[in-house]
Image 1 (cartoon, one colour):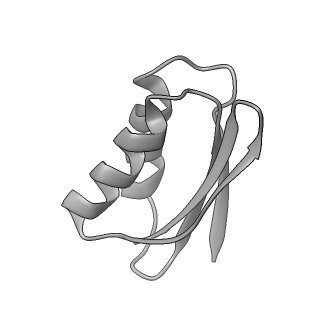
Image 2 (cartoon, one colour):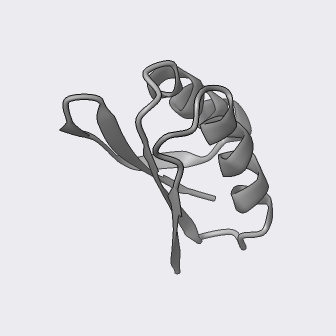
Length: 73
């Protein structure tokens, strides 16, 4: 199951904070799709996922300053 988290408009570190809270509620194997527009999160979110042992299955820039990333717990 994939859950979508839209954090566009939130400044760092809030996209990461919200991602951590959402991921904590998911079961192993579930995915979290995060849409964000904070440049710092392009490094912070994948780094956090790697530290936690989560798999990044998709990471794409979808606009001038917006990205989407999918992380599987």
